Image (cartoon, rainbow, N blue to C red; front, side, top):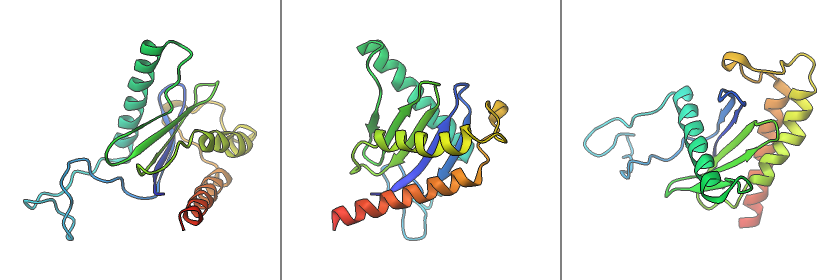
Length: 166
């Protein structure tokens, strides 16, 4: 399993936390050469972290609304897969959105995202008296314990999957 990135969006559509572990594969259909250039000598266009987060939020917002319109209010958007990556989604009752982007072979991580919310976000961000309740203007989660916890949690998750595949 490969974890490419992890995002948390608040109810105001602001990205309050983002972490990248590995670059997501290019969806151009052309594989980069060993020098990092695409065929024809073009440099692959890399999105800035903010643009990437906006693109991810727009995707989950659109897909979530489409699922609710087609299936009703009780249906939930959980994940979607492309030929290059899989996006996992979990929304809390307070409209926080947890998103993890992984490789396509990964099973559903909704339970994992729920565990990150309950075990890490609630414990280190919500219960922290120094952490703001709202994150206006994109002021993100700035809690070292939360960041370390997410890093350890993902490394543990990767270690468990590596031992399952061996």
